[in-house]
Every structure is written in structure tokens, then in C-alpha cells.
Amino acid sequence: MQIYINETPVTVPEQAALSEAIIAFAAKPPFAAAVNGHFVAQQDYGHTALKEGDKVDILAPIQGG
Image (cartoon, rainbow, N blue to C red; front, side):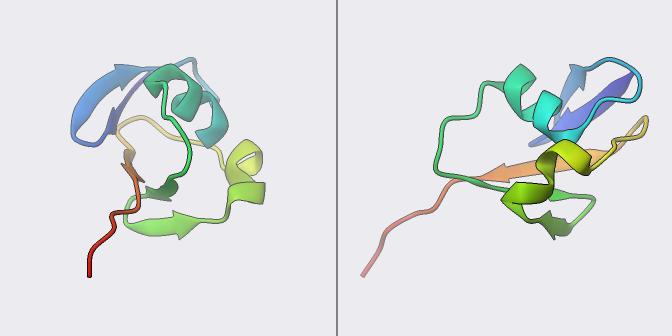
């Protein structure tokens, strides 16, 4: 199925969990993840099922001052 990670189309298996999408995207920690605008706690990545067309945002922290 096709989802979007940071607005880029990515193909993942049917019934994929957020953790699988993160692996497919090769995200490097630290980061936070949201599905369709809702942040997901890190411990829930493996239990968060994705659906066709879901929008996943992977956000890295930025430092400023």
C-alpha cells in the first residue's frame, strides 16, 4: 500500500505498523512521529496500524537559542 512520509510516497506492506514505515524511511534517531497530524508515543510505533494514504510526519528536533 502507499503512504506518505514527509510528503514523499512510500510503499509499505498491507497491515504495516508505523515502526515498519519508519524502518522503510531509514529515519535516524532522535525523531518524533505523527500519523495524520496526531503524534504517536515511541512505545506505540509497533502497535499503530497504517492505512492506505496515511500521512506520516517524521520530525527531528532542532536546536536554537
